[in-house]
Image (cartoon, rainbow, N blue to C red):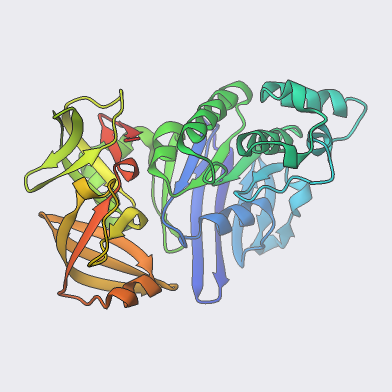
Length: 364
């Protein structure tokens, strides 16, 4: 299959350097990595909002940017749809007017209605944005981005502010929508569930560079998986088994266990869990522990700390696992933690993602 998007570019942003090279076919590509990796800046450069220092961007055989020949096509002419996490619906326009905005020709209203109908918003034409739920606003934003028939759709964590069940429903809708329109999609996230449920291709990004580009199915190869997570240096990955004990689902390994939230998708057997660094909660001495955290309290030793953009990243060793945790600098200073000090921490069952047989499900 021919590449729809070919992009190679670099950009210096203060002390941060972006150096990106990627190719995308008629597929959903997920740009995955921690906060501050450069994912959103990559989308802005592809969309034409930010101009790179050098490189070349080609979309559907159209040259959008080439530093060597001084070509730079402005954003409005790129035929690229863009949806940010912070929605940019016009508050003074109705839902229908928002989707029709920017469309040309006598059929603009019919086209806008057809896209709203496709998003199951048939009865919402005359609503104002502040009369919609979060999920409905996201559907309107997607309809508006797709109505002009873009050659590429860029999505910057569009569902991150939504609750779990709604996020999962919208991901399923997006997948079905792609099968219908076949518009290439580049989707930015730091949520492993988005990778599991959406990606045909995964771009692993860290520190301004894409460090891995692979088909989503290969992400679950044990050797590839271990190398990626080790290189990414972000999040805790533990291999073990799911067991059922006293009516609860537990993830167990040789020297520890974690309670999981009940889920019909969980079955006993070998599995791996992934825990984002910001979901490892510090246990403050002399303060009561939240009941959700009590079953999963762990003890470890701080082996290394790193300060990054106002946050403190801790590497904690305990129960034969290297745990990656991230906190605000204020929290770290309040507890007066140091390398070599013991620490108590815990994880809510709902924050643990279970990976089994090439698929993943949130344990919630």
